[in-house]
Length: 116
Image 1 (tube, rainbow, N blue to C red):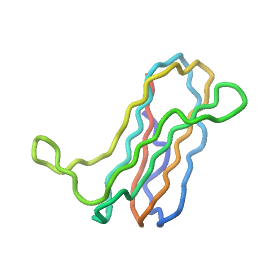
Image 2 (tube, rainbow, N blue to C red; image 1 turned 120 degrees about the vertical axis):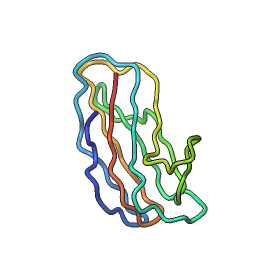
Image 3 (cartoon, rainbow, N blue to C red; image 1 turned 60 degrees about the vertical axis):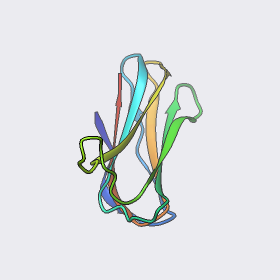
């Protein structure tokens, strides 16, 4: 797992993108995790996380997810520390991955990527 975007404050309507990360071996699964730090309880989505791949000469979206603010409780009854999504597909060795975060409200977060 790599820290794609270090912990930081992202202002409303701001988009932050990571640098590209090289995939060393073929993979079939990508997971993106966003830390839920100081996400306001707006009753609606406060963040959209998008994962992109470049396996030739152009970037294309692999997948994205949006998450609402406020506290999210797990089945065990404790607050969820992250929002995450996993995307399936062919990721050839030598591909580049990057992630971007678009905030719809002022948030604090960090984003990690992993692939296997």
